[in-house]
View (tube, rainbow, N blue to C red):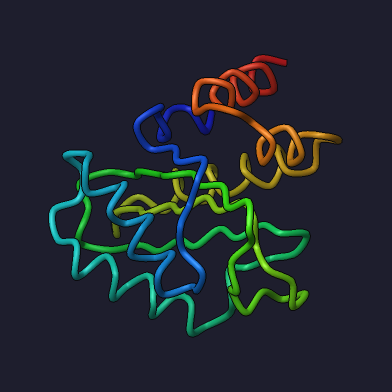
Length: 152
């Protein structure tokens, strides 16, 4: 699965304003509600918080991948955000996050959700990819970086 199948230009924000995890969830969910795929915003937010209570999705090296399965969405959808100042996220390594990819999946199709998580992990292992994304000047630039890596 390619990340660009579930992430489009309108779902990318390169200047996140959030300072905390709760603010970030609200900000990223606001981006996702602009799509026609979110049917119950409150349910999605509740399910994101439930998932986060299990184990922080702030992995390490400034990356967070908040995700959940929920009845509040019609299909798998994602948003990407970049924070120059960093966000207090309770990450596993204790550091602030600068790159967040929020992904929300339907309850009945775990295969796509797992494939998308795998693709995100693969992209993050590519040398220099993270730096290119967090230093991008536009959403178009981010899409081009992702497209380039997914075509190789």
